[in-house]
Length: 128
Image (cartoon, rainbow, N blue to C red; front, side, top):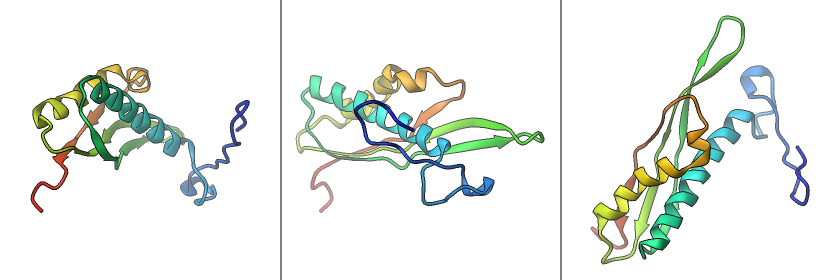
């Protein structure tokens, strides 16, 4: 896929459909869009709340439902962001901002299936 001014994005069908497993498929890209939209919304909210985010990783997963005709759809997506914030951060506020980020994400708002969050927010150095 070519988008003006950006590197080409090589893709394929999923390996289940005889695609190239080394390339991203449309399902991967939808998960990536949901995960990155949530992350960017969350980081913006944290910046406004003056919450220093030191690390952010996500392990998003989607559940697909296949139809007998060969088609299918996502049934749900679960985002599992793991966030590290600076010492002194109010964990309750930092955690609550995930719900707000989910509500502000344009991609999630455009989906006809639930996009849930199982966020873990931890303070840098806690428990070490």
